[in-house]
Image (tube, rainbow, N blue to C red; front, top):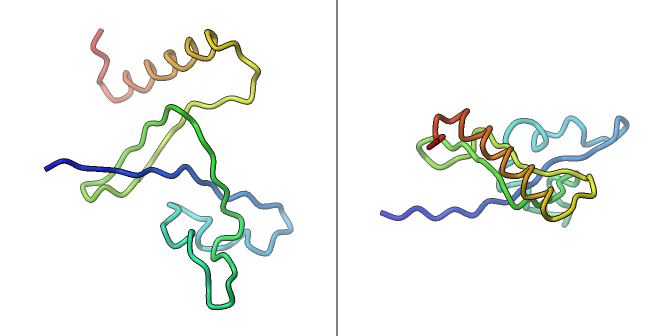
Length: 103
């Protein structure tokens, strides 16, 4: 059986005075319900934003639900060569953590 996964990188961003700060969808794992709208046409998780990173490690449970994740990303202005160097270093650290280092 081949498993297929679609991974959306998302997080909840809100300010200290945001009424949605204590929203259930912004605590713990962000579920598919955050992409939905209520009867009035309002987004259920209005503080949900999507991100992107080309390299991510996602731990799942036996049902394929994400339980933890980490992504390589930086706002620094890096040359393509430096980006790849740092990305490889980040991946090596994650491989060691997961005892997957083949070296």
